[in-house]
Amino acid sequence: MSHDHAARRWARHTITVPVTVSLLVDGKRAKFHCEATDVSRGGLSIFMTREIAVGVSVQLDFLLPYSSTPLTLRGIVRTRSGFNHGIEFADPSPDQQEVIERTCKVLTLLS
Image (cartoon, rainbow, N blue to C red; front, side, top):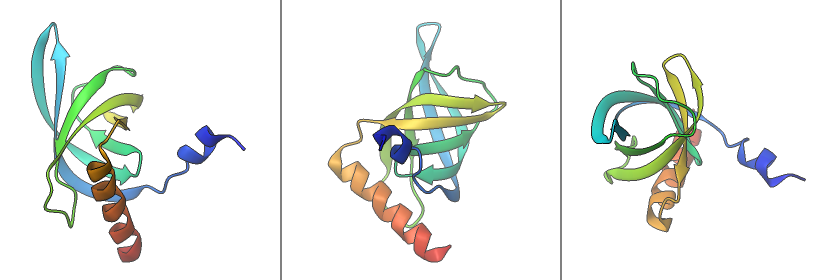
């Protein structure tokens, strides 16, 4: 039983929330405003008009639905298809993980 396989099977929940993505571009920090299209316990799918290469580390600032806690998380671009980017959360704190998991539970109940 591969743990990786299980990790990729987290339920995805459709959301529409604004996300600010910060990354280094030519050695300078650049911020881009985009939109998350789904969330899982392990990451976000975002739609942004700038393409970011797979493997790039980014900072994500966003507020999940039904939550009053703004999140600032590091993420790594794992997949890209056109303007859709799959970003895996990197080292969320226990508090942040709890907010994410609680939101996913609420979204499961509402779906």
